Length: 113
Length: 520
Image (cartoon, rainbow over all chains, first blue to last red; front, side, top):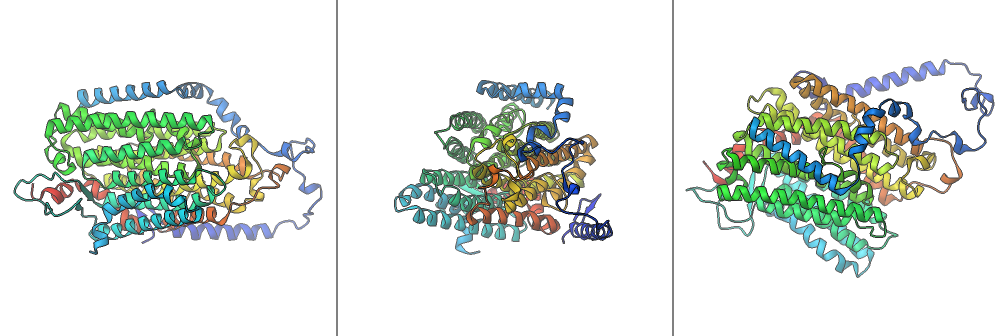
């Protein structure tokens, strides 16, 4: 009743959830076996910034939205240059894309069938 | 069958339509009276949609016909009669779509009560909100192509008004203009197609048209116009560019209902492809057109979401990409509909199930974004941070909506995407690879949004923020409940409502025609 079968695969969320809870319990047990010498407020709780001193302002500690995937976006810059160029925000370009797709669909439907 | 169930199709349109005109008048008595009226209307609408669903799904998705005015015809017809009255025809797919709309309208209206509490213009907002609701229900229930166009136009006018509602913001006005113009363009091409079909066949009733469409050149041109016009209104790439503008600039509850509006256009497209044209035009070619548009929509949508720094535009691009998953599932089903292999129905189930899951997840994300933007005073992710310290519940709700939409188990998004992955893999592994890769990217997108908005240290800027009022929290909690319940028990819902809806489209063309025309 709760699961899904596709005819070639199966998905049972209750079994998955039980397994997930089981793994959490094991993780908690392993964690409880860890070193008990943790001291709140000591150097152990300082933010590690590649050996640099922690900034005085809390704002400076936060990784902002655009910084998170900077490397990935830079790596895909060739793709993004093209895709961003489509998104001009100009209304007549929106119409052009619509007309282009309409023409292509006509060609495919009429000539390919 | 009770009288209420019998008249549910017309009441689902008439009640919000009357409410749309009554809202500004009742609003003169005060906000309390207006909210009571709107609350009553959305509750009645939800109850009617539930009644209709129980009736249709109880009959395994068999279509029912409602004649406006009644008494002229007895359905199914006999002796070569032609239905010339306004007809509503509801099958499993129509009833399923009404449930989605009812869910979003109910939660959207309750959210709006608190959202508009301290703002002016609430009377007109709710008037447009209910007008949009009536139009969406009309598109989903009508059995007549011209009425479909009329309801499409009602949704266009109301949606443009809602998107451009905040006239004091220039971006809002620009987005409203773009939506109005693009929707009008879509409506004109749909009207042109309907005119061509009427000129060729002399009918406007969908069942009668379906029985006479043969796949000639005029039919093919009409199909191209309908396919492109409705795909554009659904937000398919590369005709999607209005969508981030609209979803991004509209007030948060409106953005959620706009998603239901896009899904209504997608429903119209599916209805036309499967019921109106069926096998009379090469389903394989049309199916592959849908698949190619779907892949573009999925990939471009999610990669554009990744580089957004505006929270609402980020969610908007995410919502665009999800339209692609629905098109992929149904496109695979259409491409193989002649041979009808087992995976074709599975693909249809996945695509249709994802419509419901997407509405719940994207609705939740837009509501949560509304709460976040209101609290922080900005939409810019580069200026947010640390909100999770004081907006605990909102951050939990946002996280659940995000992981569910990205297809992380055990939430509902995974259940529908699982069916789409498996079935599209059977047609071509390449389709499944793009679908899975894009889901992973979407998770990355929402990790970025969550990290930027909710994580980070407490700052002076976040000292004054808090979770929104109960009126805004309850709709979000209700959608979270839907996400969890549909995620944990997908088999039950797929059996009870998704499969009858999928079969109504995939296998139900003859039954749809027969319900009106009898043994034709």
